[in-house]
Length: 239
Ligand SMILES: Nc1ncnc2c1ncn2[C@@H]1O[C@H](COP(=O)(O)OP(=O)(O)OP(=O)(O)O)[C@@H](O)[C@H]1O
Image (tube, rainbow, N blue to C red; front, side):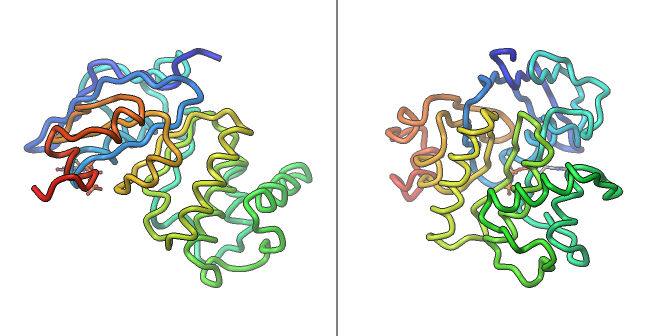
């Protein structure tokens, strides 16, 4: 497998009145926290990597391959969104099965991997239930199971902890660490919580005003007192 999982080179994205610019290289197997104030461009960065947003310029390369012209489904990426992860009218097993086949045409091996993935995230026996009967943390774990059955080497998590209480956050972080060790996947997660960065990330990318302004090891990031935006994020300043 190539050493670099995600490489963005001279990537720009244009909205009516805005221009975002991204350059970065993420090593295969790293867990990277993506942080920064609201509107900084975190979701847009994910959309560029996953293929939901086409850049105006630049190159997106995943596992050494140029992704130009490749639809999201053709990319080696799974995304877990903060909300709307699950279809309310489908059973938990079917919601996970969608990760294998969008028309839910699963063979025996597919059905077995759905059961195995649910068991792996601690939801064995939940197969026939509906999403509405699950807690927020359980629903996030169903989304994780769906990502697991897809077996894509790059996992993007958009605020995976946002809807969770502190105990659930710790459980989710532990599960993600275990899954990362098992699958050797590259993981990027958006978070607004320094605590989540400390327990899960190897590196931190900090975005401001449409650009990656810092990209460094987690220890360096967490000991920062500047720039002001980072100090504020870390709770060292009331600016
Ligand atoms: N489809 C779009 N059309 C126009 N502007 C957009 C579009 N998508 C994003 N933007 C703008 O681009 C900037 C970056 O948005 P983005 O959603 O990536 O930020 P973010 O860091 O994820 O914010 P948040 O933490 O609030 O989710 C914002 O100013 C946003 O208004």
